[in-house]
Image (cartoon, rainbow, N blue to C red; front, side, top):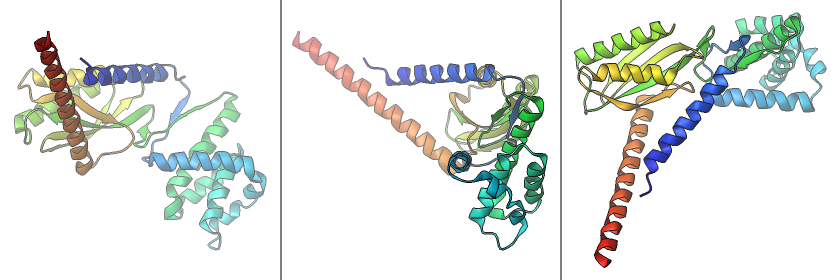
Length: 272
């Protein structure tokens, strides 16, 4: 019998192992983007930066740095100036981006933050004469820690009781503090509870959250073993409900396949 759920679990375990291996290999001299910036915009910025350095006259746009503060300069030119300045290891280029970030065009605030981070990394690499590692996620982080959005799934329909909410809060806070983490937000809704947390980049995520769920379930068995952990974005309630519906649909489909396999087995036994 083909067990699709088992295969998915195996794939998740393999992916988690690879991610942990990658995190453990990160050197100590790394920097984390602290601001919360959409991942798609980050990808656009770095792709734009790569192509710009290949196709454009970088020094020409560095020479236009005062254009950042000229109201007549269009947004597209400002984007190019920022990317050009970010590719320079000179302190004055970093200062120009830093100054513009104090009062940026609203449309270019996140773009400017990314340019400032790139400029900082390049400047540090030049001063320290060693390659710097830059880590960015959609939810950002703080210091050497990453921000995660977590969804705990209730076993039964409805919202958690006040006692269950307190138990989850206390266990989550205790486990986070034990691992040098922080609890930023906790919100309980029908069918699920969401949390925003800050965790050291090399913390044992899986073991930590598995321990929280196991500890809570010793006093009421009210949380599912499965959960959602992401550092890409904060999911809104509609996205979480859609995710849960997809999960239920996948479970129903698998149950249907299992029943079909079982029926085929019975048919074969009857033929014999």
